[in-house]
Amino acid sequence: MQVGTPILEVCGLHKSFGDKEILRGIDLSFETGKITVIIGGSGSGKSVLIKHLVALLRPDSGEVRLHGENLFTMKPKELLTARRRFGMLFQNGALLDSMSVYDNIAFPLREHRSLTAKEERELVMTRLEELKLFNVEHMFPAELSGGMKKRVALARAVILGPEILIYDEPTTGLDPVMIAQVDDMIAETQQRMQVTSVVISHDMASTFRIAHKIAMLYEGRIIEYGSPTEFRASNISEVQRFISVSGTGPLKADGAGPALSSAQTAGVHA
Image 1 (cartoon, helix red, strand yellow):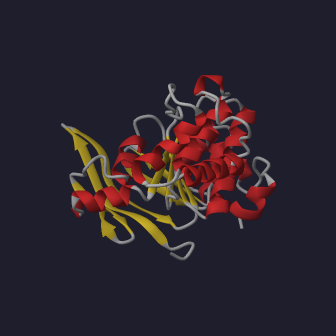
Image 2 (cartoon, rainbow, N blue to C red):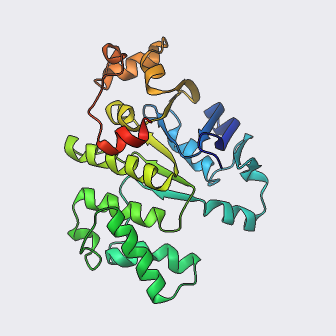
């Protein structure tokens, strides 16, 4: 699909658990080859929304369309094929501690592809090199730093060549230097693979560094959607409060913000 056209669309999504309404009519589209960041506080519905994007939850009403096809009307085999178009980077990496780095990354290939040992190794080593991970294939997750775990988890997430990458709060618990490195990793992966990226975050500094579009989820509704510049200029009080609490207040509405890497300057905000 052409960059910038919708690849994934959420239409009128409602979801309740018992008497508690979590999603209250979500309408949101994700542009091909772009980074969309979904922000919101705890309890705003971010996790529930993400589970709907990959059809792990079924809505009370509404649709999630991938390439125009509703995930919730697909037959089981069609849905399985659709899910393979997604890659997921979990908050803690979710690496398998009993497996080496190589085996962690190769695991999806062994589950979904029939490759020779040589073909498998070429794919795994290429992903490691792309993410600047050298001589780590025989190491185990416990031997890796936090940033290295994130990159190994990303290598596993992209090994099947997904069209859409979902990052679940990738900078949570990291120091500022590591956050910047993860931001660069997300931006460089988007630029290199032209993959559509959906990032769940509550970190506004990180969001302003990487996002093409930002959507704010508040009490189960999208209350603002737009570019970083449009988002900073929002006149919605909840948006400005969220920005202010995050330490990147409206005084930066002129576009000033955290320094961008060369990859981000060239690709993310092109």
